[in-house]
Amino acid sequence: MSDRIPTVEGRIDAGERLAHRQTPAYQTKQGIYTRGTSGFFQNVRLTAGLVMLFMYYLFPWLNWGDRQMVWFNLPDRQFFVFNATFWPQDLVLLSWLLIICAFGLFFVTVFGGRIWCGYTCPQTVWTQIFMAIERYTEGERNARIKLDKGPMTPSKFRKKLSKQVLWLGVAWATGFTFVAYFIPARELVIDHWTGQASMGAYLWIGLFTIATYANAGYLREKVCIHMCPYARFQSVMFDQDTLIVAYDTERGEPRGSRKRSAESTNTQGDCVDCGLCVQVCPTGIDIRDGLQYECIQCALCIDACDSIMDKMNYDRGLVRYATEHELDGGQTHWLRPRLIGYGVAMLAMCVAFGYALTHRSTLEARVARDRGALFHETKTGEIENTYSLTVFNKTSFNEEYEVNFQGHPSARLIGPATIELAPGQTRVQVYQVQIPPDMLANSRLPISFIIEPAKQPANEVTIESTFIGPDRWK
Image (tube, rainbow, N blue to C red; front, top):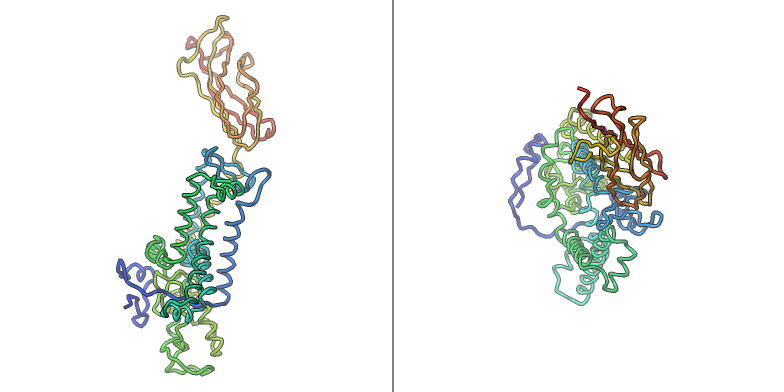
């Protein structure tokens, strides 16, 4: 039983169609047996997936100097990404990055629909791996259907067991690699297999192993259809100029089977009703039924249909990336206010993020006046203010900071001239500033503390403050 909107009733606005489709909260559905295919878009998906997997599995094993290249050291509150070291104080940069990703997703969705889902979503990438293992161990689509319907035999048991073992192997490698971003990978290997790893490490490896095994092995399209919120709110971003995977009804209908190389006639469209576009779909939909929110824009149906069109000597593109306006015979408006707005906002935030990242200081310092007293007189009659200087070393090496003072030629800074800090260390140092009372022109005098790193003098920090004296000049 299908709840899809038939195209014979005419096309409606893309966002309206997605918003008004009625889908039961739960619907019993037979398992989806996908068929392998090849083509341009499948090659793009494989390339994108391999690049992501290569980065994910390799980064914990690469070193940058004497440390892991990507390492989130939670106990020491240090986050190493290539040559940069981040601290909890830099989490505002993470907020910026998440906002940029959100606007990037909005921009991509308005332009090309759910292409993020089809090409680079982790659920899609890992599901591809599990499906490839399934085809390798149990055979292609028809062989798997026949195998599942048949009785349990030694051959069937061997194939099923091989699949499960390989699935668990990939799932475990995924969970182990995730934990290796938080615990150095080389240490984790030894501790894991010798039973010396922490209970937390075993717990997280187990949780991610189970999650990967369940999501990529069994849930698959159910994650995309029922669990992923992106499938639900995408309709508010679609319009008739959004590039989607679409079936050309005008060209393909009425569909019908025929002999190879047979020419289509006025009473018969180019669609030979082979059903290949449905068999290769990872979510099990029929693209010929029109735009459906279950479609993840993976374009496997395009590759499958093009292969049939080549065999029939028909033009490619019966199923293709197109817009509603194009399918209706109109002109696609590529530059439209919403798309431009998302693009400009994303570009502006990227520039701001890049500037903040490249100009991020490795030194954080602040000065606070003594709140117990505005000032006091010393035994020698000088006016003294007390300040607390906080210095935080945000580098990954030991650093020495020289503390200087500006503000008045007669002022005297009392306190250590240098402060030595280990990586990630914070120190609060008390300083006194003394000025002879006859040298004060008024009760408030602007002063500055200058903190200069010895190894990175370009990261010098100047902190403005105020020296307060008696109010007798009023």
